[in-house]
Length: 121
Image 1: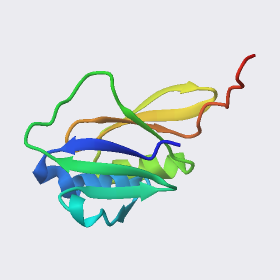
Image 2 (image 1 turned 120 degrees about the vertical axis):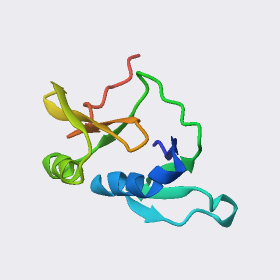
Image 3 (image 1 turned 135 degrees about the vertical axis):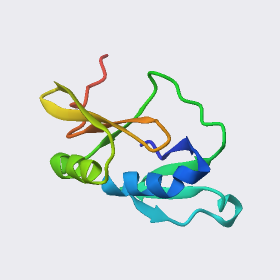
């Protein structure tokens, strides 16, 4: 299980970033006292840590992917809040889209995960 992903955000984008992740059913959780400068959100044991910085490093290919079982509702939430969403081709028969966070990161929203693969040998 992936526990968390840390994402750099511009300090002025923190509140809007919270809205983005809440649209995907993540909820705010309290970080430990030693990490109060960060904002943590969680869904089903996986956390997103928003890390304020003035120098957000964006790259072209890396992205975070999350499964949104209520895919159409999640996409509608993002669009209603004014976030950029681009539908992508289906994989394994499941809908997916890219959504852009306030600080410019790509998040792949997947209707379902890929089928589990068995180990060979």
